Amino acid sequence: MKLVPLFDRVVVEHVEENETTSFGLILTTNSKEKPQIAKVIAVGKGGMVNGNEVKMEVKVGDNVVYSDYAGSNVKLDGKEYVVIRQSDILAIVED
Image 1: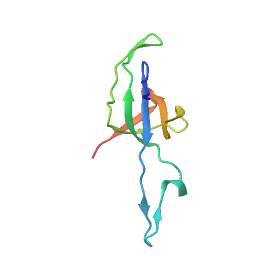
Image 2 (image 1 turned 90 degrees about the vertical axis):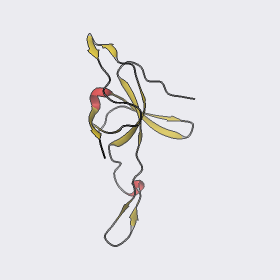
Image 3 (image 1 turned 180 degrees about the vertical axis):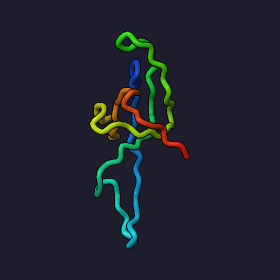
Image 4 (image 1 turned 60 degrees about the vertical axis):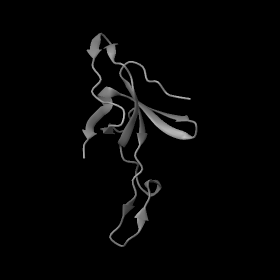
């Protein structure tokens, strides 16, 4: 199955990051707060939303930072996703 977002919605998946402490211990994402950094999996088409024209600025593959408590969590085929509005995206993370 596939999630296809509508209008100004974006489907994201958390980026798994392991961190190593100064002592060499590896901290997984389960042992700390989940970062609000995610990879864009699917993007809606934009269009008229609440009487305003919305142009989609993010694209599939972008890494983004989004607001705390934004969106709806969805589990599909054993994977967890978050469906958010583009306006809840705060920044695109660039290398």
